[in-house]
Length: 339
Ligand code: WQD
Image (tube, rainbow, N blue to C red; front, side):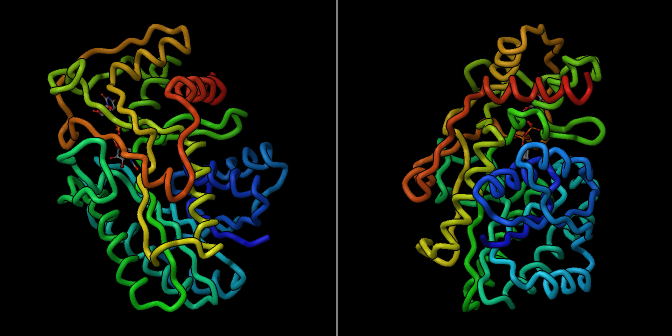
């Protein structure tokens, strides 16, 4: 079966995607620099699939290292590129770290990939490219707006780099997957989200509060024009998201793509407010969550949720797991890791 490179494959979405690739019989080689992940995730993947992926510790900013890797693994048939820094707030304070780590690495990987006979590339993008969309649900034709953060800008620039490269490459085919809000953990409780330090994202903050690691959840604003005043997002179970990556990769491997560059929104199509997420957590865990309403967070959009028609019609993919499924899996994972 084809060999697939997964960069950032020990990360949250990367590790869940490696599991689904192995379940489909692909041979997987992971590159990860372990800057925001743990080598123990390899054991978690093995515990689920019974197969340990090939692993190379490599910082993709090491151009020569990337060249050496591709010379050694010139039988790679596709790349799923997760490796990037992804903390919105951190990117505002450290823009050059984000431009160097998220852009240079993409260029080095593409330069080597396009030398291979087959060059199939799946890019981890984000709904953040839409900013506050004018129309909801958000389709892939929604205009890309000025990024609210250097992190979001690196996703926009990344997509443009891929578009320009596909235009002049004989063999490069690419799909950008624009995720909404990935949450949850594998049902086996062998892999899940491992935020380092104080979580920026809502769901890990909820589970860490419930387990006693954090004092209290701050809900950033309840004066937005939404059903209950709190922001609305499209929370997608990470396993549904991982499965979409395998389907998108197959589309390229089997030459079923309709253009050399395509984009797909990956979400449930349903918006949930912050308080609805809290209520979901309380329902599935039986725990009462300690939270308080505070002021708005800079840069938050009011509402974002996906139009899922293109992914359904073109990829034949839609989410199967619910918000409650995701919150329960996140809670079980938190209890295992911290309990
Ligand atoms: C969700 C909602 C917050 C924390 C970002 C990136 C996106 C992706 C996911 C990387 C918002 C509220 C949060 C808290 C809160 N990242 N919240 N208290 O900002 O929608 O998306 O993370 O790929 O690209 O843009 O996710 O989980 O930070 O926030 O009230 O302690 O929860 O205000 O309304 P976000 P989030």
